[in-house]
Image (cartoon, rainbow, N blue to C red; front, side, top):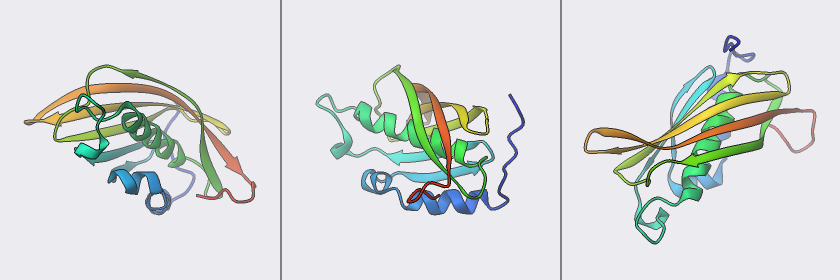
Length: 151
């Protein structure tokens, strides 16, 4: 893995501003809990309205958390004029997502000029225990100079 050195000294501010524009994250009540070069953590408190028929957080919510964490991890290393878009991802749902909260951790595995490969894990926190519920492999694309796409 190449060094995770941000190209923008204001990467954390840029990520926090961009995250605040994510209406889906607002809707589900997710918060940005940690931002480091090449690593982002997103937290979500358990809510009944985010569950599927068995009372587990819906897989779509779990995937959205992991995808967003991976995207912002990649974004943290991109140039100040870049935007980020997901190219692809694969998620493995390992265990039911149930607990007091979920935490999604996205990390850059290999940064690139155009494509960045990331991994993401989602953990359920319950009674002081941390259990992995999903893992993701994702590819993110740096977009520059495209009208309407900014941070």
